[in-house]
Length: 412
Image: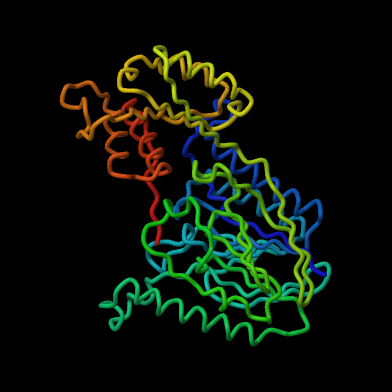
């Protein structure tokens, strides 16, 4: 039996809903992601496990800051010093725009860090672990750039390019599986989107349609376990061998409010994989919705917050207040924010005013709306999903306060 630890999508640099910690100079959300990453590293070293599979997306950006690189390197070095073989795949957030450029985690392979293996292509390696050999077929994120460099593919549609790309990937997986030693445990470690899997906040972290791999292409009997990254929702797709996403190591936005975050520890033997999902102490995200109906909406909101005190403490909080039109000018946001002072971060307060007749942003022509309220109403009127709307409102609020804001991320 070989014991592996499977994790992915730590996205260091994801700093929405955070502020600078004056004691460390680091963004509080970076500290959150590092803390939950540390829980996985600590489990790997303490167990100890025989191998770690990191299935892509070390950073939010393909060009991470030196601080983010340092924090990731510290944790990989700890695995290296513990003598634990560690496989790192390139995810879509790790890859550059231009194929010849280095990718963000490539440096660990160039330095020759002991027991650390970095992959950008579909390959097969054999790891000699404490408890015996382990075969790993690596399937990093694949891009369309290689196809677009060839003249015959430049006129193809996005859908056609995805189909060509997926067919090639599935063919290479099949060939790699057939070449495996049937007597030795084997895993496929990948960063990809499997058709039919449940998606989460990653839909806002990437632009464009993902190529989708068929579950059947991964369910080759030569594999005993399929370890995946890219989708943020922790899940196991039914069937044999088990196809598992570890999910993001911490919550990215409110669409992940109810999701459990963590990593997998897998006892692997030929023909069998026993999975244990290990939860981490991810920062809670809490949505509070209040529908005041009296003449003093502020008092009703404050009393509701007081009843939620335990949930609010140290959480990222989103407050939604559903108001009657006549109540709109009576909500004291300063008092409300003071009541939420025990929260780690408070997102822009959302006022949802009941509309009794359809109107085009009522109040904007009379100057009755603040710029932030006007933007919120516009985003609601244009059906921007809540998770995306919160990010845009937060950025707008920072701009109005003349604070610097990070660039919105896009990826292949």
